[in-house]
Amino acid sequence: MRSEAKVEGRKVRHLRVRTKVKGTAERPRLAVFRSLNHIYAQVVDDTSGRTLVSVDSRSPDFRGKSKSGG
Image (cartoon, rainbow, N blue to C red):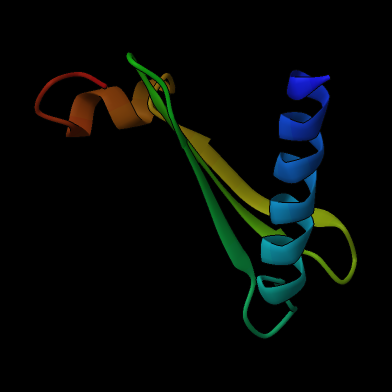
């Protein structure tokens, strides 16, 4: 029962944040995910529901430019 309340609370907080943060065509949203080894980024237009650009540190172009290799 306790874990269900935690999950519901997380969903409510997630919805509250997502209503305030929306990407438009004029000002898209930048979404960044950092794992232990790599970093991933996307530029998202939420009105059309499309990812405009995505890049990650695993790509060969990025590896040559970074100091640590990703």
